[in-house]
Length: 234
Image 1 (tube, rainbow, N blue to C red):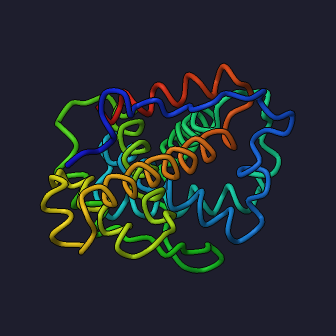
Image 2 (cartoon, rainbow, N blue to C red):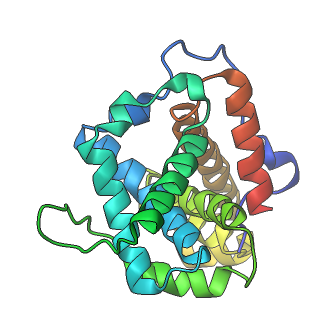
């Protein structure tokens, strides 16, 4: 599978403009349903992997992630988060680490139900991916970062828009299919398939960079985060 376009197509940044004065937009608008859904969809699985890698079993990890997200919501942590702290991922990692420490000190196993909100998350799929992707002894932070990149990639793919045949061509391209086969399966000419893939690469780049741009506080952080995203998928 082509996780990302290769060689000359890996210029994710495109034309660089001045970083907007308003940063962490996605984070600070998390009270809005769409923004909150995006944050949870991109970050819950990395959080789950991180907790699992700390030695918690499947069921306990589910409860920890649910409890952590609920705590963030109850404390309005998303909208109150300080952009001066830098990258949102760094903030989230520190918050989860502190949450796990607090739970360990209290010897508390969080239980779902009662006043605790339960987010609709596919933990069965998450556990399957955890067992496939994570090696024994890997640092929890390494696991979280790689899962973040993969989850952001997958989430961004779902946001692509275009002609169904063009989207199918891009899906086949990402899976490593050659253009001759793509043309046969989509009914497009090879030239049209290449054009469609090129355009959708650009759209995907904009989606990914746009998401990252809304979770960092400076142009330097944006460049660093995009570079790390690329390296994690290489």
